[in-house]
Amino acid sequence: MSSAAGASRPKRKLGRLERPALGGVLVREMINFSSYWRATTFSSTVEPTIYLLAFGFGFGSLVSEVGGFRYVEFVGTGTVATAVLFSSIFPAMFGTFVKYQFQHTYDAILAAPVDTEELVTAEALWIATRAGVYGCSPLLVAMIFGLDPSWGMLAVPFINFTAGFGWACFGICIAAFLKSIENFNYVTSAVITPLFLVAGTFFPIDGLPEWAQVAAQINPLYHCVELVRHAVFGWEGLTDAAHVGALVVFGLAAWRVAIAGMTRKLVN
Amino acid sequence: MSPPDRESPLSIRLRGVVKRYGPITAVDGLDLDVPEGTCVGLLGPNGAGKSTTMKMLTAQAIADEGEIEVLGYDLPGESKQARAECGVVPQLDNLDTTLTVEQNLVVFAHLYRVPRSERRDAVERAIGVANLSERRHAKVDELSGGMRRRMLIARALVHRPRLLLLDEPTVGLDPQVRQELWALIDAMRAEGVSILMSTHYIEEAARLADSVTIMSHGKAVASGRPSELVTEHAGRDAVEVYGPPAKLAEAEGSALAAGFRTRRTGTSVAVLGLHAANGDAAPEGERRPANLEDVFVLLTGEEIS
Image (cartoon, rainbow over the protein chains, first blue to last red):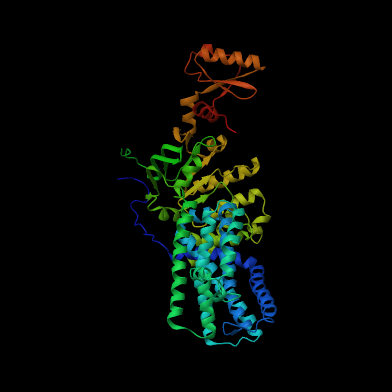
């Protein structure tokens, strides 16, 4: 057949989603994180705290109870989901675009034994892990303002991780399909802002017109908000199983689309 | 179709490779061999298809037609195996600028799967190759252009690859730094690493490459040892005619009429192919040995930038 070098040596079969490849990309992120964690941690904890204080005190003085919860409890749990959203979708959108377009980091990584599927998966796992942790900060702040601790809270980091994985992949999709970073403004205004408001974070969705209530059902953030609230105040069996299902479906779909989008962008 | 048997195995083998981008055919039926342990220069003007060829070797571009084999692996299917044993020095600097020299190398030791027990040594060796021991804790941002290029090469060597792909390794560097890098690349070849280097610097190819493939419009128009290419295509000597523009035009006209080939080089006309025509008819001028640059211009019809 051919006389090319190496043909006689035993070939090592390299498969998909290999641990060394995922590990390599994660190591890169972790080492990078060691140089900017202060700024990220600051913004990821201070921002939800400000929301919590502003809405908690602002609205809290007008309404004492919402949907059967004290308002500070309602908004404290709702802010968890927005913290997850912001700490996953924005790093994914901007980080991916910058690493692809400006730093050419992905060219270097894909020249190594790492495939696009592994690259995207590792990036999303990393962002999801961060979102899982940072998403808990509003809960801690709310506890200072009187939220009672509960065992269910231990599930919150995992809910955050699952939702964060989906949002990270969604952010990677945006970076993969938009041509310039200026266009991100359209997504922020037209997609992320409504997602974040119509999810039962700051006010319950049952006060909204019916179409908005239906729309909320396909908003992954809504499912995240509900799950966090139920984790803190009491599980609701099948309803929560459906919420978990929705987040898992969202995560898997966004994951595959992100891989397809980035493959189209990186391998041509 | 099957290539003739040869005694030395090939690190890279391309046969009839075609790559199109929409209406543009970037690579148009390219054949290319890199025998194991040699340095092959891929020489061509900008837009000849060199970078596209380099991208196909790491499966970051997928060929539309043809066969590509790297270190015995068929691409793109087995590209990951091939990439594990290749080092790549990209044309664009893609170091992590906020990380230190050492951190950059640690990251790549992981990406290239250097076993845990060997990682420290691999990083130390790469720092030595880049000659950056004293700057190991400096952020890449703080390094000079030459240091960053040395780091890119060291990074590509962290896992002791059998094959090194260099895409325009010294583009945009001053001559002193360039020579420093040449010494580094030459040392790698001496260690037995196979090298494919794309460049549009003639001197770089002439000095480093055991053999050169000249590309033009996506095709290999000639390949061989630099000295053989010169004798074959440009002859032994060239005559350089200097003078005012009018004289140059006249010299060019009469040389072409006498069956020579000519090349404009700004202030002079080089008359080439003296061996092909009658030696007596050689025009008056300064005689000099023909060089690879003459071959390049004759074959591609383009001056080098």
